[in-house]
Image (cartoon, rainbow, N blue to C red; front, side, top):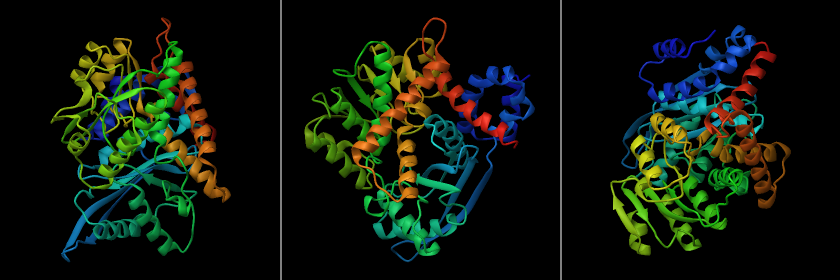
Length: 445
């Protein structure tokens, strides 16, 4: 019989100084411990112990030359967390704050997120403490070549299929794939998020944001409501936020905020025109993580050094980074009338913020469910590559929509409480866990 605190104490002993991983693990274990105790075979096969330990972790040195001819050294990682359901699948993140603990948290979350999509994908994550900000194209190219020279030893279309993540966009994926092809002399679906000219899928850049809006629409429909006319706060301004802003606007909502490290934009007219979306892509491509230029261009309000959660809205979509929405932010949102909080970044809400939202019966969706659209379309890209075909944007979008509807239904099935409140966090964790755990048992690991 498992007990939460004793299990977590042992996990913390084995994983010191990894708060994000421990936070993610506690969130899942807390949800599934009763399910595990009710199924003795899970205890017999030590599923909780095995599912919280990565299959393997690779760490390597990345040496590259900057534009001044000086040698720079970074660390590279790949965490292959669990492949019970299929090849490891998860993005590569380039960010100066990246650590092994962060990647273990992301790989752990990815395992259950991928399970929820029902596509045959395991969970993994990787990246480097390299910061693309302020680097020239030539420097980024040299870094990507050096990084892939080591990474290619551990990945393959049937083994581990990385994708882009924070700091890794279409440019970086292209450079990485070019080096992989140069070394292996083969064209395979070893990376997703590729350019359309060399095996990429339509809708992939927008998919995470699109999927979050499809999931949110299902939440609203469950409450006999609609997204049309809703006032929305979004954080970030990268691919995820961009896709979310576009789809929300298309569905009739009014997005009033985006944000960056420098602060947030409040656009009372709404970020709802192609010109404004195009400027978001310009900002993202500029390697300059600031949003203030948006305010200057469109006459919006710029609030320096603050987050957008103080703005009164109906719905909030954290789209930037983990733990970006604090307990105080959650309290402010609820006090200002927000009824829905949909994590579109990975673990976008701090643990105490999540607890508060659930206690207040706010409609809260965890990232592993709501932001699964990105990896879902990555999985669809893998299918297209394997079959050597290309689906239309309408076909991909329809498949994405169906996947998000199914994820929502799984959360409702496992997370509906006796009082009718849907605990989407618990529902997502249990639904994702069951499939992985059953596969591990059936394969006799």
